[in-house]
Image 1 (tube, rainbow, N blue to C red):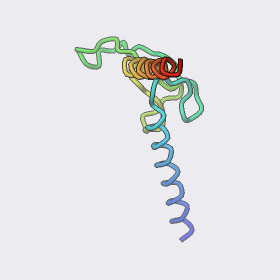
Image 2: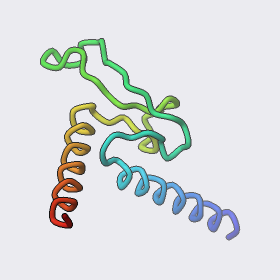
Image 3: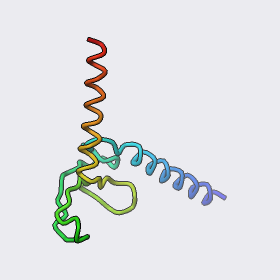
Length: 95
């Protein structure tokens, strides 16, 4: 019984962390939810022949478990520009 409760609690914490990661991936990430810093990297391997040298913002301690950032550079920049445009329009309305 106690072991089941511990497992449920651990599973709930895991799903909460995945939710935090999914909700935090907007704009240019500076800190990963795990606490590590993010860095800009270039995928030099030709993973796909149509995307050689693709850029990413990636967690310093990245593991492919869904709890760390690995966000395409283009997506992050696009979201950041959209956010800045929205802030600009809000400011012009106030003035």
